[in-house]
Length: 435
Image (cartoon, rainbow, N blue to C red; front, side):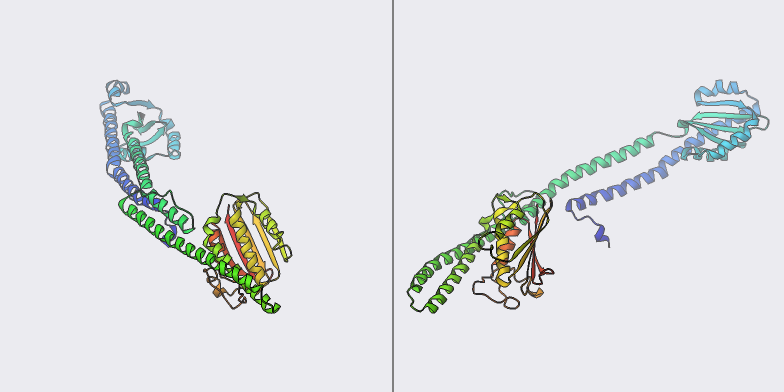
C-alpha cells in the first residue's frame, strides 16, 4: 500500500531521504524550544510583571500611596501605568472581557496574575497593550503596559532562521543530488536510444565511480552488439548478392525450356526466390531507412493507396481526425507498405482508419482474412518466424515483414499491436507514433 504513494523518480527519492529526517528534526527542535524554553521564558516574564503589579497594588491599598506618586516613582522604570477608574464601568468591562479572545501570551500572564494578586481582576488586550482592571472595593485601578514586557520577539527570529536554514540546506542538497543523478539519467537515455536502434555517439562517461563503471560496461556491450549486428547484416547482404547471380543464370536458362508449363513453373519459383532475397537484403539494411525527410501521414497513405501496386486492390480509407503534423517519410511509408502487403497476401479487402492529433498519430489496418491466434501474436514479431495455422504458408513469406516493421517503428518511438478486427473480422494492426 505504501509503495503506491512513494515517488518513482530517483532524484525525488534521494531528496525525500534528506528532507523528511530534516523536517522531523526541525519539528522536534521547535517543539522542545516551545515547551522547555520559550514557554518557560514567557512564564517567568509574566510572573515578574504580575509580582510588580501585586506589589504596587499592595502599596496603594495598604500604605495609601497615590496613583500619581506610583507613576512618578515606578512608571519610568517598569513601563507600567496605573490609573483610577469609576467602578460603575465594571459591568461593561466584564462584558468586553468575556467577548474578547486572549492570545497565548496574555492568557499565560492572566494565569500567573491569578496566583499572585489577591483581588478581583480581569485582563483585556487592546492592540499591543494589556489592560488589567483590579477591583479594590470602593475604587478600581486600571494597569496598562505593553505586551513586549511579557513576550520576546526572539521566537520569530528563531523560527525564521530554522525555516531559512532548512530551505538553504535542502536547496544545496538538491543541486548536489541532481548532479550525481544526472549521469544515471544520461545512461538510461543512452540505453533507451540504443535499444531503439538509434546511434548513440554523444554519450560520455561521468559521475561517481559506480556510475562510471556501469557506463563503461554499457559502452562495451553496445560495441559488441553493434559488431554482431553489422556481421549479421554483412552476412545477409553477402548471401543475398551471391545468390542473385545464379538466380539470374537460372532465369536465362529457364527461357530455353520448351515446355511452357514447366517454364512458367520455373520462372515463378525464381521470381519468388528473388522476392525473398529482396526482403533479406532490406532487413539487413533497415538501419539506413531513418532520415530527416518528413511527410503528412494522411497524404502518405492516400499516395500509397493510389500507387500502381495497390491501385486495383480493395482498400478503403477512413479519416477520423486530420491534424497538420508530419512523420518520418521513409519509415512510415515502408511500415504501411509492409503491413498492406501482409494483409493483402491473406485477404481481399482492407480498411485503413487513420487519426492524427497534435500529440499522436494512430493508424489501424483491418482485413477480412482468417486473423492470427492470440497464442502466436508475440511470436510473429520474431525474425524469420512463420506460422501455418490461421494463414496459409506462402513460398514468398520470409517471416521478416512484421519484425522489420516493428524495428522501424521503434526507432521513432512508435508501437505496433495486433488484435482481432471488429470491422472486417480478420486481423487488426494498430500503429501509434508520438508526434
